Image (cartoon, rainbow, N blue to C red; front, side, top):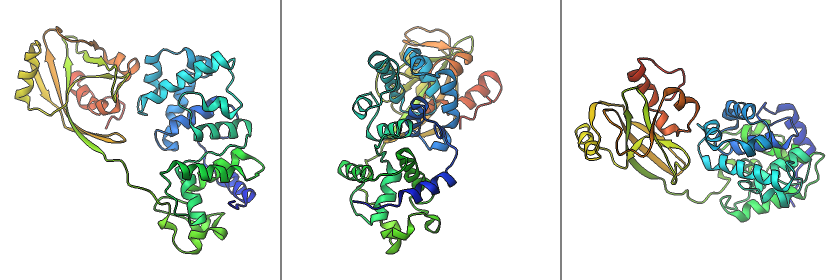
Length: 355
């Protein structure tokens, strides 16, 4: 059994904790939202998305009832839109099976779509004080160093081992214990930069004792990242509206995309390709190339503004600037072109930073 002075650790946390979304509250709904958003990006960067989301969708009931387009629009910029859909699916389950109240048992919580062991532990411990561990990368880094343990942290068995170890402890507040270990990993026991002199656990840390901090944690090799090249056609009609089409599947499922081609082509070839589709082109403007990094893919994109005379043979429709900004969900990869597009279409730079 791992031996940790939990009260010393919690005392350190209460003194040094950062002000983050979902912290210092016991309402499971905002804790749930903050935890799912934090899976997308750094917790510090979540704040504006979190505040906007809760302002528009303040309750489990409103999440269950919200239109998908609005939900995805509010999620825009966070990526992994399937997580937003899972939130709504889970909210509907809570309304149907739990009378609109977030479950208080691990069994019921883990059955909600999009909620795994970490998220269940985080919500139940912080909202209800239940003794379930929340084991993420920060926790694994802290504890493998604390024990100087060479277990591969990419393995499910390692996560289960440390989950069990933490749940054998008996802190005064289990939610604070989970948060304190995570906070320690995020602020003190970093991946490459550590502040061991400030660590409340250093006196019993085996890796610190052996001067081998950076040897842990042990990880197997990462999944190979694939490279993709795309040409993005921003079709423009006579009213300076921009064409987008809804994606039914794939990486961009549920979002709106310009017409794209999975290869990069020259401006001359743009004319040939689009005219072969039956479109009549008035004018083309070449845009600067953009790069976007997904979790396991890198996209290199060449963009073109294409003014067309008719709208035949198109499966989507043309949207106003207001609709693009406020109504439809568009991946950040395409929004990287917007600053330049807005300059050409409206002779202005949009107030948002799309770079």
